Length: 391
Image 1 (cartoon, rainbow, N blue to C red):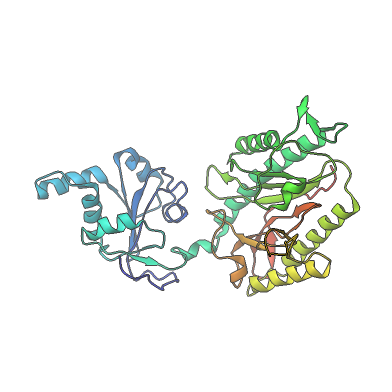
Image 2: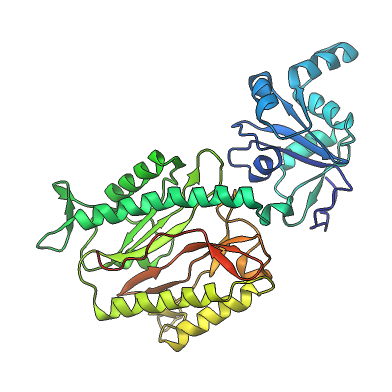
């Protein structure tokens, strides 16, 4: 493996190689449009694209893959066996495929497996990892991709609507524990209802959707567990994948089943104003880092500084309070897709989540999250789910 290439642009002056599956391999899915659970080989060189597939996937690849050439692994192996006088190994078949198409010195993604790189080197194939995005064109969504992402957002909203429905129907017991269907309504039970709705709408549930109540909501990635309680803040964060396209949705709402306190209501409202501040700043050329700092400063000025509270005299312990994660992140075929919101100048066609949150130990957490497309003049929300507060 040669030293990393600094090439971060869409240059195609060198062959580009991907070897991965495409169910979770976003670069491979974007390059080929072909869904396969097992690794296969993709090569792009001089404007032509080719994939090497097993017999299991070959016929489907011919029909579905958006490439110029689909090659049968078994047929290529049989041809190579004649010239070698023995049965070739899988890596020898891959190397023959690459060499025949000018792929002896290809660029590969930074996460390309080291062991595989060494096997290829033994066959005369030297790979060079690319710093940053391997397919930078992924960050600019065309009209078709925006439509697919909008559909993924609708699937996500179906899960959120089910959450609202169940919470509204839940009864408040004398101990303030929510009951539904004759039993306590737990984070686990509500998560099942949410993810069943997502599945029925055509999504692949995340399996770890966030349903975090009260103090649990102060940890942004706490999934939530146990009985849900009335009159407490409940964070609902859903991020399924559309089964048909592979694109992700991502949506967060914060609600109270019952009556909110004045402190809870103010936290919810200030967080919403912070999100509106961020959304109002979205436009091509805007600096995501500047937007993040403006939101953080807004929260500080309104009484919610970012700090560790409860730290002992020896400097140990304590918890973060305030706003201590990013304002948003890229979204697409990856849930957290490059570029990082806080480290980029925005461009038309990019899609980001905008999700500021406030987390106050002893009070609870609030997060508002929507999906926004950067347009030529500003932004357009792909999500349209309402933001109810008291249910």
